[in-house]
Image (tube, rainbow, N blue to C red):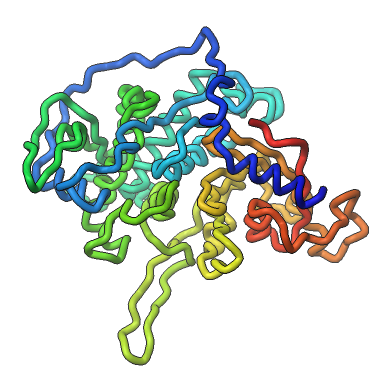
Amino acid sequence: MLLSARAARCAALMGEPDELYPEKIIYPRNTRTLTKTAVIGGKPIEEETCMALRTLVFGSCASPPRPEWARTGFTLRPYGQSLAFGLRAPRNTTRGLVTAIQAIMLKHFLFKYNRQDTHTSPESSLLKPSYDRQIDVLTSAIAEIIWRCAGGFTVQSTGCSPNQNVTGNANVPRAVVVLPQETPYVQHSVQYFQDGLTETLHLFEFEALQDLEIFVKRYLYLFQDEGGPGAKLLLYSAILSRGLSKIRGDLEDAKGSILGGCSEEGPPHVVLLSLTGRASPHLHNGVLHVGDENTYAVPQWGVLVRSEIGFLVHEGDGQLSKQPGSRLKTPSLPIWVTLCHGHHGVLFNTNRELLRNYHAERRFEIQYFTCGGSHAILTVDTRSNSGNDSELEGSSKECPDIAATPLEKLIRSKWQDAHIQWNGAPLM
């Protein structure tokens, strides 16, 4: 395929069809809504916690926060239809978090299901879920992020049950979920600018993943409603579950903030917080000690364990030093959050064994999806790397183009020198 045609398709993918063509979004008559249960109980947020939380996230509590975080929810697409597996979100600083939720949802759609419930291929069944399946998966994804930030899966991996409650054990995870109420507990002043949400929060604590999932599902409408504060509630819950002091340590900047000076679709450490439970600004493996003969070596904490979902980055040919380490490039499952020239998306393959089987990785299809409504299927052929050029077919015999599209370069950051073929036009 000519570069101009490939570039046009890549540019179309990087667009936002949901926003450019809103009249093409058709909602079925049988669209269902969640029951809106009144929020009861919880502990009112303290003034000190409220001000510290706002400052850590937005950089200041004396000025208005970014408004998009209070009006972006995790909106589901029409169930049973094409792209029913996907979320729909505007392009703003919440996109990184929404895309991370999308990647975790794909994990549940593709690899966390009852095999007795489906007798068809993943493409025709698993990626066109019912409404009930959508709700269950969104619930699991939100609870999973909060539980991971609380250290729940770390405790589980050391031999403790995630639902085990050990009295007096400091290692028992304590997940925190925040939900809004009507009463503000911090008054408007020179030191604090009321945003209508943070100062009304009630905190709910959980020591068992099952209890957390039940609670999230009961109040899922607060996270899922379009135009609601779902993204802000999840980010607050994840940060409080991790702990304010630990988040500051993750950022390695005592005066830093989560969203301070971030790009249009949000900072990478929000994605890492969702995928690994740590808000590290570094993508490398393990710990690197950085210093010179004039200064003490300072540790930079990257990704400490292999991630279940990966993260691929291509921000330009001159940004190779910012490439993720192998723990993000080669995750446990063939799903990657991507950051390509400032745009977040998800790459995924429906074969669980892709990264475990050399033969499966020789030639395979990979799908690319953005929460703006773009979807494409590409074929990746790595057989030239093994020296079997005679096995290549058709247009895949072409040498990788130096002027390849950004998406192709991103894919080659994982599969070097792979031949990439676009299968049809991107779906808008």
